[in-house]
Image 1 (tube, rainbow, N blue to C red):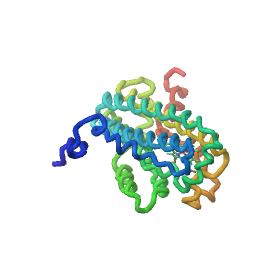
Image 2 (cartoon, helix red, strand yellow):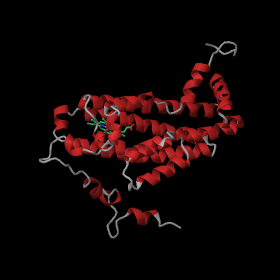
Image 3 (cartoon, rainbow, N blue to C red):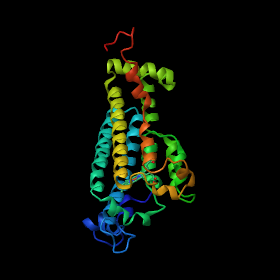
Length: 281
Ligand code: HEM
């Protein structure tokens, strides 16, 4: 049996108030600028990143919930959670203009002090990516060897992700979905008939999510370009290979824009309405 949740959450001996329940003192004690003065905009930079990390934490939680619902065969609950996930990702994109209000010259007043730290080292972001469906652990090389997040992220990769959970859900409707060839025929029928509706809606929420994550990536890349133009990213100083490939900074970010989380759900659109299959064009 684990410790009761209340004992974990409450600081011992403190009365229950807004401050103690939400650990406000701990939370508001975490914004520590590195610049002398400090430079005014470093607070914006720190708070924006920390707010993202909290949202990444919630996203991972909700993604686990959605994966669990699909694995149990509960498409209605999966769609409900995917809707919430979509709203959070929309919020993340809306935060970008707040950072864009920083002038490039002001960012340069503290940027050197951040090196070699980089967004590439965000374990929270990787966890979200892995739960969304990315199955490549190459990005883990940016985390330090002793980083405790490494083993957690490897466990997440082994567990499941939205795509594998969706395939498990589809397999309940048609066991042929276990194989990619069987799946493409099934998806084509699903998109022709829009039935079974819960499965079709789940597939479409995944496409919404793919699109919205792409929009965040795009917005983040343009924001980075506004701030640093063609300069190397801060990660160039942690991994010489990353720097030497000439793919760093904004070029790296633009390279991620060709990724699709659920390529099979995009491909089905090209297959629809092909000659001889009797569907409308
Ligand atoms: C002035 C603001 C920012 C600039 C100039 C910027 C720039 C960059 C650059 C150039 C990279 C590529 C890696 C590198 O070369 O270091 C990167 C990666 C990344 N940044 Fe930012 N960034 C900014 C703000 C943010 C914020 C607020 C977040 C929110 C957490 C964030 C999250 C990330 C993540 C997760 C990556 C890795 C993306 C991937 O691997 O696909 N960045 N950023």
